[in-house]
Amino acid sequence: MIIDYFFVLSIIGLFITFFALLYFHAELIYNHHYKLRAENKILF
View 1 (cartoon, one colour):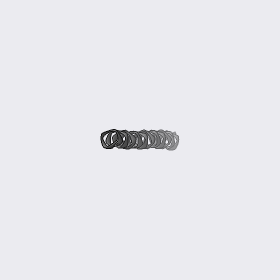
View 2: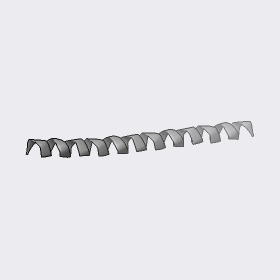
View 3: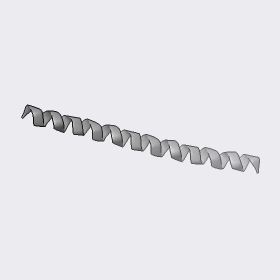
């Protein structure tokens, strides 16, 4: 029972970290592109 509980917790933890990393990565890409677009508008 205890092993199953920790196993489930680790799986949930992995999913949370995966989605957090995915969200963070998407946020970084979005911010990068937004800044690039803003700079291009200023330049051109």
